[in-house]
Amino acid sequence: MKTILRNATLAAAILGSAGMAAASSIPGMHGHDHTGITVPDMKQAVDFFTDVVGCKKAMSFGPFADDKGTFMQDLLGVDPKAVIQEITMVRCGYGSNIELFKYTAPDQKDLQARNSDIGGFHIAFYVDDVAAAKAYLDAKGVKTRLGPLPVKEGPAAGQTILYFQAPWGLQLEAISYPTGMAYEKGAETVLWSPKNPEK
Image (cartoon, rainbow, N blue to C red; front, top):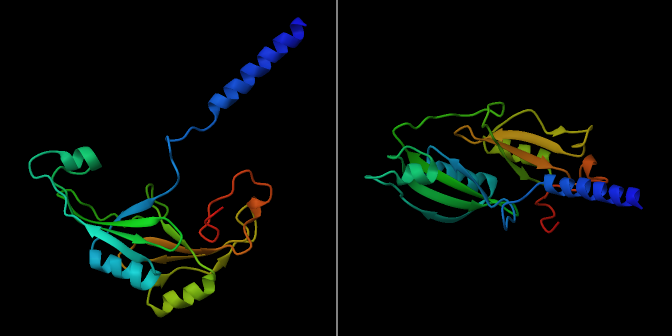
């Protein structure tokens, strides 16, 4: 009986510590709402996202500044004299929103980050047909990279991808996986997809 009790206590301790090691969450977190991007020219950026990509403009607001204090630094971690001249929100199909910022700041840098740079990023748009997306982008004069590239091995098998670039250098991607990806078979967690937003 003592052995059973000791083993039960040990099992409870192991299971309890495994539960404590599980990932926690920001209280009430539902998902990705938007990605914010600082752009050099707001009209150019809005035109690109609406007229080329196919997003829809939802709203614009601003400017925001603090001539006398440190509000901008305290709120956003930018130079205290930074000015947000305008913010425009666009909605892109069934994905999350994109927030475009037009800033000026005494210490502003033009980073033009590549995908390999720490802090570099890209935005991917799900499309039905990557080859059709490439033909469309080429016809619009948008810079595209190698592709469409079908992924045939590994957990991402089933994807086809194509990277492209906004006029000011922002990295973007067209991606499609109409029959899913290899990892999904038996996966405990599957990635959210705009092709099945309810899943």
